[in-house]
Image 1 (spheres, rainbow, N blue to C red):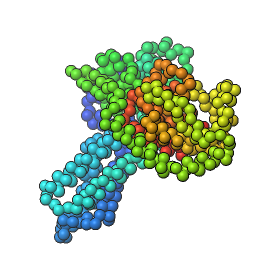
Image 2 (image 1 turned 135 degrees about the horizontal axis):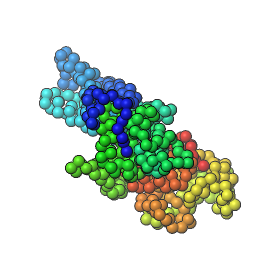
Image 3 (image 1 turned 45 degrees about the vertical axis):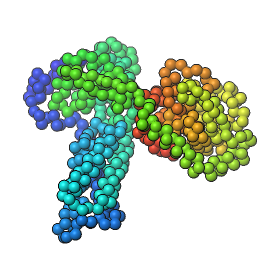
Image 4 (image 1 turned 90 degrees about the vertical axis):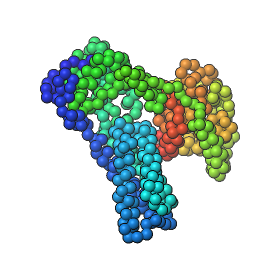
Length: 497
């Protein structure tokens, strides 16, 4: 996989030993340093804003600090020591680790850990110094700072996503392995532009003959030195794909070669669509065992999900009742027929139920579908057509705004659906075969992962893949993220027809 590197400085590497420890600190890509600096500035500002709110909104923020010296110490603590302590604590919990920038929940989990540590630290200091501080001020200053830090991190992540969409703040990746395995990793990382991984080349371990006459998406290399290829492509990350990582000696030598170059080495095993919380590294005598846990669709989190589903749906039905009345009148005025459309759908464990929607089509829509099948713009089990002539004028607006789905809150209250989950499929399509059946392990949802990832613009295979990913990696945090993302998707109206 990796031969002896030619043209390297002999003072840097000899027999796999990096001569200068300082060279290890130099990275091939330094965009993260500017981002880390911006995060530090944002965290400091967030902590100071927390102090501003606590000092100005709590009744007696200076309680316990009566003399001038004590007031000076109070101001020093609130305006300097606490913000500095926030930054140091965030650094100590790894909240500035570049590996978690832009994707996943780990960055925010570490911010929460830092908040818990700050609460423990302030409580310990108050107890040790026997300070008669205002409990309300302490609670407000810590809670406000934690909220502002999370908000600033969210804003920073949004800006980073925009920058990565423009090609900045990314890691240039050279994929190493058999061509089919490398191509699978290529497709996977390209589906997640927010991760900032941009494949710039593939190094095939099978030799150049394996890709002869193939139309490859990026340049392909074979038979040369891997690190030299990375230098030519200006790649700052090398990703070893699939079975290419099976040879431990080659992988170890490649890691030696990369020492001092500032390039990252990552291993992409043949485990796709498995989220981080299910994967753990268990080292045994130098052998890193990759432990994959079973999906957890139960427990306290699942109970909380059910409680939130029912309570939120009941509240939503009450709050939206005036809107329901207005939509019902508009549907009746626009075209003859019932206000609601009910269709048999497949739910959890294969049980069928009547799925409620506002009627968006003319009453003869199902009879006219056969004549329109040649115009179907999607594959799989669903029929989708952007300019479907069966949709009424009011129905077009209802679909664009996704208001036609709101009556499914009734299905959620009845326990047939959930707020978040795979979309329910029509029952008349018969039994589902293969991987599609795994969607039936959970209740279908009003919104889901594929709705916030492209909706009707996605292919059937992509929709199934996203639904299976949701089932295999479910968590309460994922549900909350999907709900927040749904609001933005509905406002953009992309893929809604």
